[in-house]
Image (tube, rainbow, N blue to C red; front, side, top):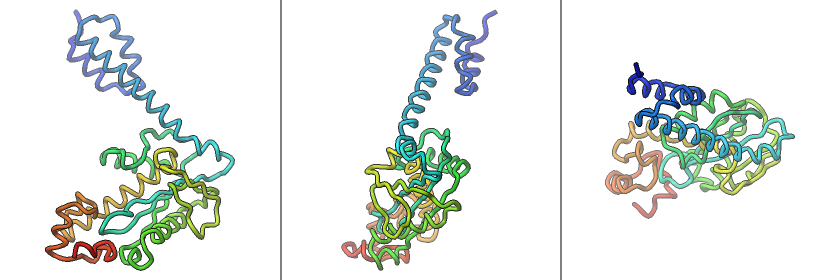
Length: 252
């Protein structure tokens, strides 16, 4: 008696990706269209995983280039453009042989995927440091200098001292460590990509908390950027304590 297609579908659905080849072999000779569709879907999953492994392997280019350094640290920031909230920097040192997949520029990932990767990075990283520059500090010393300050703060919060920094585009002043600025580094270096995810998730969570305090501005959805609902609330209610005064002059 032939096995019901529904049961076979369930076996494919519940199989881990590493087990799919074995399930395919088990049902390869079953020519029913429903079974063959499941086999085709399984092959696509395997192919997608292999493609992701190749993409991730390419992200280790700079880490391989500087492999002689013991602790390679990726640095990135989030929040230079918003009208409200801090700028947040992430610093991440990954193990030399790390198997995390799907790391990318945080802006290219869904919120769900960022949240998943945040937990994985926090679990597997050698060390993670997070730094902040407040809206007041941004107004005081300008956004670029505040970004550098947040980055230095993130480095100082690492539990392990880095030997080399891979930075997203910038060279950080007043840091006594070799630095390698990489244009669009969050999409080219696994360490910088990881740092961008840590910074993004940290800042997004913070802005959701601020939304509970200042619900009129839509911070949970716009994260402090200049969305129309944010601008309208700013004109109607005025600035909150987390607004950057130097950024909102044109709206008041």
